[in-house]
Length: 190
Image (tube, rainbow, N blue to C red; front, side, top):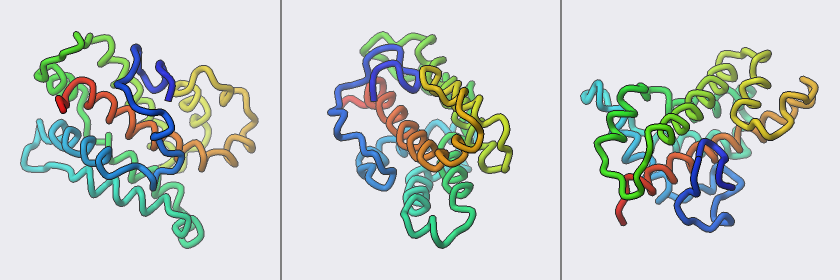
């Protein structure tokens, strides 16, 4: 994933790009676990009694992305979007910023960088919500906001809809890795 993608204004923490999988089901457990630990904390700030089990949500999403689900579930596309959306569905902007401000930043993190991260998550959540709720028309525009340097906005609708299963898997992988890079860079000292 090149720098600048998914809201990174600076180089993400060092990771061999070839290690970022092309299939959601190939995301390593240690990546899922790190994302889960921090996201569970952030989603539990307002309502600590109602913590969300992010690791379970990621496992469910992996099950939805398995090829068998595509043939056995006519709504697998919406179910994939729903599972992935749950990872960021319960993030409150205020809680997100509070949580990130409480963590000392060795790299002099800026509010602008956190705003970029959060903006990306909001765009992804909006796109996934449209998929979940069967709202087709604005999806091309929302994908163009997530990937402004690509030509999704100029594609005809039929080509775009045919390509969406690949797009949703790409967005899902990049969401997990954007969270992973952010937490590894700013929160994890190990």
